[in-house]
Image 1 (cartoon, helix red, strand yellow):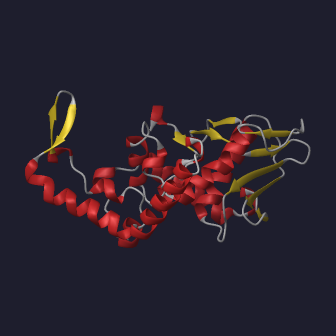
Image 2 (cartoon, rainbow, N blue to C red):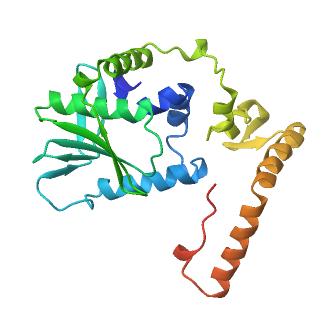
Length: 245
């Protein structure tokens, strides 16, 4: 972690799988379209509305503000804070269940705002797709979750990746970085500052990419069809279909 600080956005990822934070940092310089799922990209669009201050023009509404907690060593951004009502709001693309990670992210934002001198009277999560609102108890009103939050922050700070072993295979199957796990730097040689696949590893990578193509063959077919139609109709390149999986 950068200078020992925990990014608030990483709390939920850590709960799902601690290793995912490592991959986030590893892939940090790549365009997210290469490895994010469609749901994650759609979710990021919800936050873009807030990040560009398109959510509200009211002077009482603060959006996408940088926050910091010295007590817990946290840094990040809040989604929405209403200075008039004292409500802190986190918006998600779609919510069908309130996970611990959602609550702990709000707790982190809450403690940061309190340290910065803001008064937070209530916290909530809003599901963008159906506009449902979920009110969350403040930390001091739910001592069990407050302790779980503190334990999670401690676990993040003391986490040792080399000692960790994921026992939930289903999590690995649904991991957006699963394909990365199959790719090894040792399978390549460097020539003119480029990674070239060693010929003896051709079969391995044919299997990797064939598996991916077979899994999304219908999606690929529909993409090609829509792309061709866009070309025939003479559409601007910005209007062409994007292949997102």
